[in-house]
Image 1 (cartoon, rainbow, N blue to C red):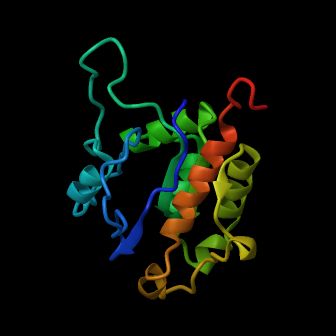
Image 2 (cartoon, helix red, strand yellow):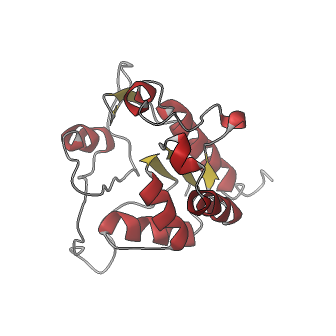
Length: 187
């Protein structure tokens, strides 16, 4: 809890996340990553970036405590129509969704960046899910204020190039910083 929050350098690369190209980029302490199956083509890069292996299944910790570091913030991106609805309903049918449900329940600052087309975003289940997650304190980067809107159906490939990775990680770092209690004598 005592280390300062800092933005995580990130860039989009054909749908993957990788560290920014700045000199001296090294694994980021206190970061862990899980994924939902089956996409795994960039997991080695993410492992290098975070300094922790990417988990897609449950694993027992070697001791009585969890083997992953404490979580400062959670970024879920790009979040599909299906994932957003599952998260809002609390469905935990795989390792990643169980982790997400628990972290939101523990009030870990959470940022979700939807990647949906306008037809899906117009549906009542999606609108209800967004409202429910926002009511629970989850920060969704969606709408004119966030300069991230659903794309027209059939234009997802083009829209991926503008995915707001940096904004997502900067927002998470800011939320993590804001959620920390003030140090004694600094209130």
